[in-house]
Structures are given as structure tokens and as C-alpha cells.
Length: 150
Image 1 (cartoon, one colour):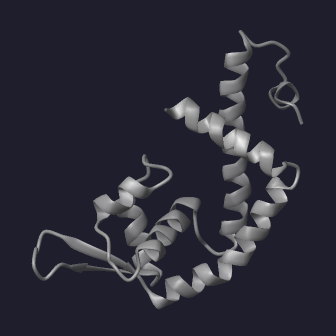
Image 2 (tube, one colour):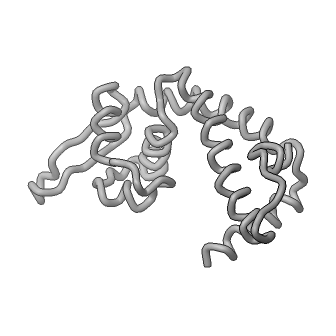
């Protein structure tokens, strides 16, 4: 559906405003779609992101700052997310032996198993979302979004 139909707005100040609103609206739309899938696994998209970050760094533990720097949503409360995941048994937090102020965070086997189960589900989700786009179109979107943030 076109942005005008989604927002029930027929005119925009200019095409730049329409593009910005389209990016924001589409980002939110993708977040809702992904959240619905993750809800079945009792995970938020931010928690899923933290688990994937930890899996990517495994077997090397990360500290909270490392995780925050790699998160998609940098406004999230990483401390709260890590604690919720720890309570679910999906990661561990322990004080570093060499530096007592440093806390090392690692994904557990349970967390690894959950991601392994989620991988094909999320892949199917991504394919469903992007089946309307060609590889060339996806490359163009990526180039333009990178250019916008540059």
C-alpha cells in the first residue's frame, strides 16, 4: 500500500518529506512484523539483537558497552535487556577476574539453541518480506540508506 493510503494523507511538503516519513513508517512496520514473530518465543526484537551480538562474539565474552555499541536500537536499556535474558537463562554475567569493575557477558547453550531454532523462522520471515524486491532493488535501497546516514 502506498504511504498516502497508509497515512491517509494526500500531500506532503515535498518528496524529501515523503521519503523521510516513508522510511520511518516502513521501519516501524518492519519492527511490528518482526516483533510478532519473536513474541512467540517470549523475546523482544532488542533481546533478539543482544543474543545475536553475543552469538557473533562467541566464545569471546563482551561487556555492556561492547553490546550497546553493536545494538540496532542504541536507545534501548542494555542493562535491563541483559538482566531479562539472564533471568531466562539465555546468557550469563560474571565479574572479570582481572578487573573487578568489568562484567563479562556470554550467551549460554540455551541461548545458542534458541537462536538455532529461530534462524530458519527469521529467514522465512525475511524472505516473505523481501520477495517483492529484486537483488538490484535491495542493493539500491542499501546504497541510498547508507548515503543518507553518511
